[in-house]
Image: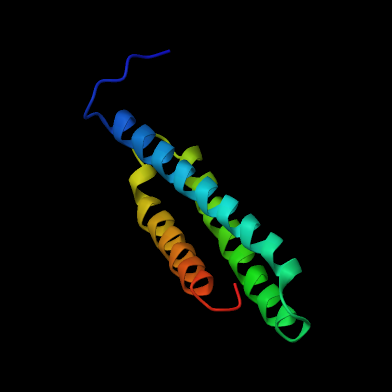
Length: 105
């Protein structure tokens, strides 16, 4: 395995990937917890909650797709994917926190 020096493009890429993987896994876990709560929701609200969960799951898949692109990129060109990855993550996180704060969840 090649030596990775701190501050190199490889170490910055690896640190970013590790951090983003953790954040996406954490959001995935939280979305799964919300999905489990839908079983306890009253019938009139269940459809709305399930639709919101589907939207979150689609956004999660989009974020993991961007993550796959960035992990596949070389150490020198991964940064071109970074803005798209950040945008996908931010959109997912914002949607998750908005939906989680709603009374029905």
